Length: 181
Image (cartoon, rainbow, N blue to C red; front, side, top):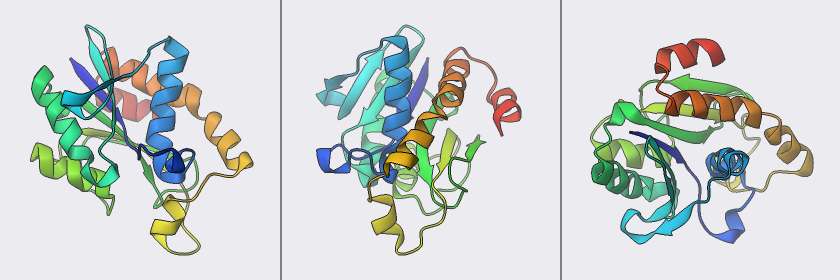
């Protein structure tokens, strides 16, 4: 069983913000495939479950994402190596995709929470570049994407959909990384 998690913040005021690109990518994948995510209180998130995989959008807010990821992974007995976390990263150029099998949080509070909750850094990541902020990081990641930026993000969905598809099909992550990094 695989777990694919899109990180973001649940309030409507955060819709289409840079920090919610994980939600946006997971929504694009779900919409393309006709999957409907439904709220599951026991997981503190929106969930779609298939026989082979689970899709999760934590509703805990970014800084507590680990709570939702831990509850879901524990319930379905999914090891960290079978988890893919989709998140934003302002240390990468705009729209640059970076896949990694493990590593530190790199200052990302959602990843910090997941590392703490799973007691492991050994989960897979799909990081999506936002480009460097011109001003404070918090204001930058919580600001809305402009129309051109939002349209540009939609252009990466075919790639991110393929990454997620290959991951849930069980293709080795190092193979996926070699293809898309």
